[in-house]
Length: 181
Image 1: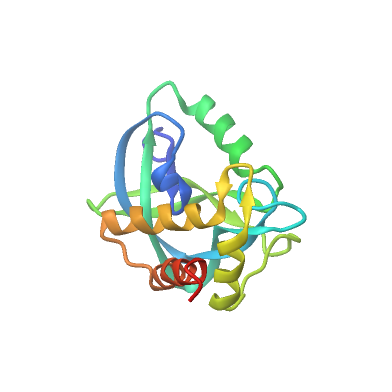
Image 2: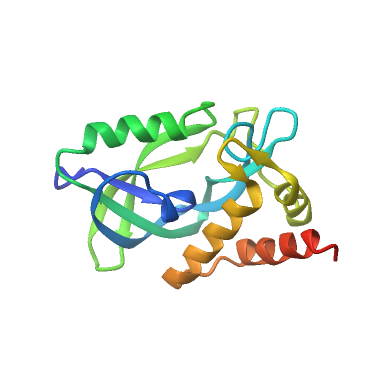
């Protein structure tokens, strides 16, 4: 951490529900990773009997993921780390990593990010979008419906002016599935 500030990268639910105190929120880009519904959710957005899907950062040398960097409020770093570890590391499918981000204001920082462990049993990278939509349309977990997770993420990306073609398609397709189309 270059300036001793704890920075956290949000690319999915942290965009709309960070759950921790922050002083600054800046759009950012993470190179070498892409946002993907590549993790089966057996707790928050699905169950062991009917897993849902949640977003994770999946390594891809040619990709980049746009999201938000949060500067944690002074004095809140330890509590924020504890909170994020309880929330994100519930099944060990995510790995905690410090990764370089480029902020849209020109700064370069190192931020905490949660990336998928491709060797974990919950990893499901490469699922066709149609299969992802079918899973997301029906799954429910401890934090609610999988479709709400998708739609909240799509809406918040749109508010930020961030386009994600796959998520936009999935949002529309899940609505169509639920409408019986």
